[in-house]
Image 1 (tube, rainbow, N blue to C red):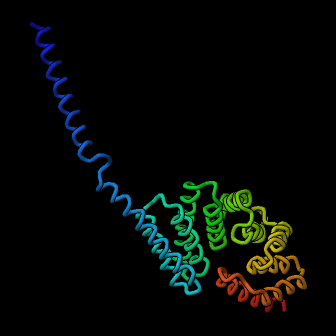
Image 2: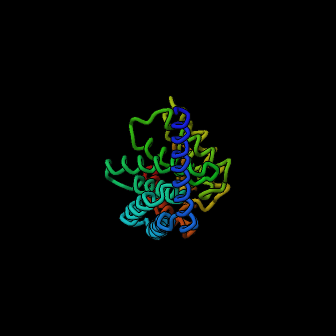
Image 3: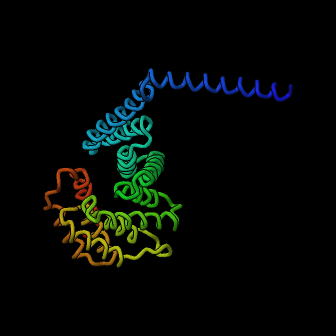
Amino acid sequence: MVNLRKNQEKLRFLMMISAVVSVSLLGLACHNGPSSDVMISSSTDAKAAADRVAEAEALYEGRDDLNKARAAVASLRQARVADYGNYEAAWKLARAAFYVGDHSDDDSEIDDMFREGTEAGKAAVGLQPDKPDGHFWLGANFGGAAAHSTLANLSSLQGIKREMEAVLKIDESYQGYSAYLGLGRLYLQAPRAFGGDTSKAIDYLEKGVKLSPNNTMMRFHLAEAYAEANRNAEAKKQIETIKTTTPDAKYAAEHKDAVAKADKLLQKLD
């Protein structure tokens, strides 16, 4: 009797399993693949992200108006919400946040932008570690935060060095060889106790200017380094070159910044 009962229970269990499998197979046969609702949702999210990225790119091109750069940040936030794995949205958010942080007069906004830019840069590096964009803009945000904060420490300075050196290994020419600018600024602005070295800064910036002579922001920081080393005649020569250089149209906003900063430096030198 016991064996008969066990056999009956096994039979009922197998029949139940068979029914479940049959229903599952029937569902698969009717849908013939993944749920169309799931596919539509995934596709819609990716498209929404791409649309927001395109919108942000147009806004970023007008970044000379800081409100457009802020709007680009907002659009890229939306893109990341729509598709968190979108590499382009991540690194472009790091770039736009850096620009706002670097140009804002509001201390709170500056801190927030560099923090957001740092997080977006880290996300980009995590998504595509073999591409230069995430590394460069992560390093730039590290640098912006370090320059703005009195709490800059050795780890943040090492972060700048690590990310800029990664860019040089992946694509030395990225952003007009601006990884050399990042390293030059690092050694120029870092306290001596943390490895600051004007001579090293000049070496990096001179190499960058040689490779990318139209990079006027690079030239400005080289002029700044020359002035720090009391090489004023060479600093003035760089300033003169900045004013006569026709920049790449893509970097018109940065060229405008370089000219304004060069004028202020020239006043100090005079």
